[in-house]
Length: 223
Image 1 (tube, one colour):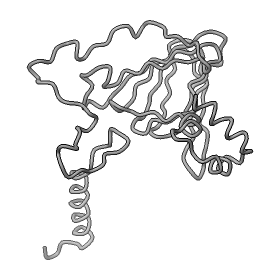
Image 2 (cartoon, one colour):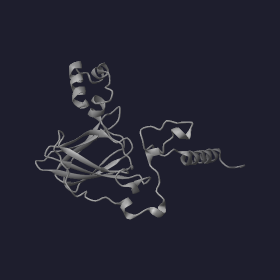
Image 3 (cartoon, one colour):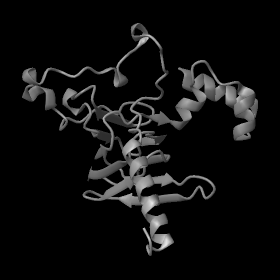
C-alpha cells in the first residue's frame, strides 16, 4: 500500500469495522426481558409466537374488522385505546408495526406514558387534542402542540407523552406504532400501582411528597 495516505488507510479500517458492527447488531427487543436458559425444556419463543405454515396462511390472518366503531370512554380518564398489535392481527408477527384507535370524551385524557419499543405517529380524525412529549435529561423540555382534525404529530421512541381532549365534543385519533409489540408504561399507574408496591419511603423522597399522599396514591392506583 506504498504511497497510500495513512488517513485513507485509517478511514478504510474504520469503515470496515463499522460495517462489521452494523451486520452484527442485535435486533430491538420485543419484550421487557429475555433471561437465558441452558435447557430447551425451560425455553419459550421470543414474543411467545410460533410461525404458521405458509401454506395455511389466509386473508383473515392479516385482517381486523370494526375499528370504525366508537369505543366507550366511560372511565375516570375519559379515554379508550384500542390497540391492534400482533395479539390482534397475527399477520403482524415480525413486521414491526401496530395500529391504535384512541377515543376521547370531552376533556378526556390519554395520560403520560411511554412505549419502550416504538415511535408513535398520531393523526387526529375528529376534535381538538393538546399533545406533547418531554425530552430526556438534562433538558426535560416539553414539546407540545394543539392538533385539529387532519393534523399529524410524532412521539419519539421511549419518551413520555400524552394526548388531552381540550374540546367540548368527542375526539378520535389513530396512531401508528413502529413495533408489533410497542409496550406501554403508564407513568402514574406503573409507579404508584406496581405489584408489589414500591416502598413508600422511596416514592416520598423521589417525588418530594408527604408519605400520607404517597400511600393514598398507591391505594388509589392499586385498585
